[in-house]
Image 1 (cartoon, rainbow, N blue to C red):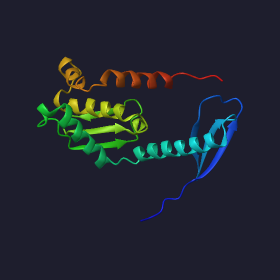
Image 2: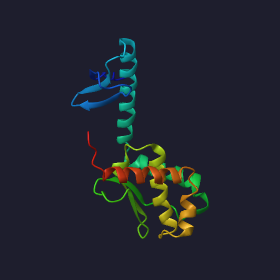
Image 3: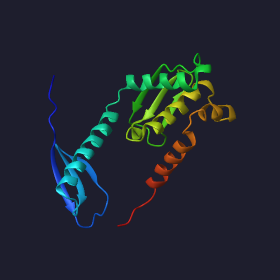
Image 4: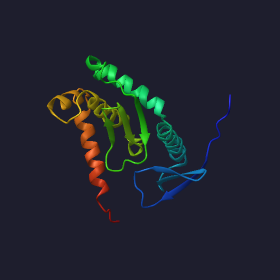
Length: 176
């Protein structure tokens, strides 16, 4: 079994930082930003926690098209089982050329494309976008019947709000 090397970690303490902890990759090392007042034990705890979060996020980013298709099949079985004969995508894949929408579906050839921009979003948001596109295989338009299918997803309204917030935040210029 191959042993996984721990990355080199650089901890940066800040007197201005009060409660938040964040981490990011900078080449081969991980930079963890913590409040200056943290004890060494708190630092160690938060470094481990942030390394786990980074790994989980990067694992989501490694999700392949095959895994995305398997996820779509699970969503069909759970929320669209009564339409399983029609909600069968020919392909489901991540794409990097969709910057104006979260996903798209071509019902004529049953292909679904999901924007890479949602890969770092929570799983329930990804599931919502995928289910939205799967529903288009059954109902191509955004009519009442379509929304009835999409709203079978328990977090549909919450996911729409999340995506609207992300879209709105993208138009804001944040000042220091």
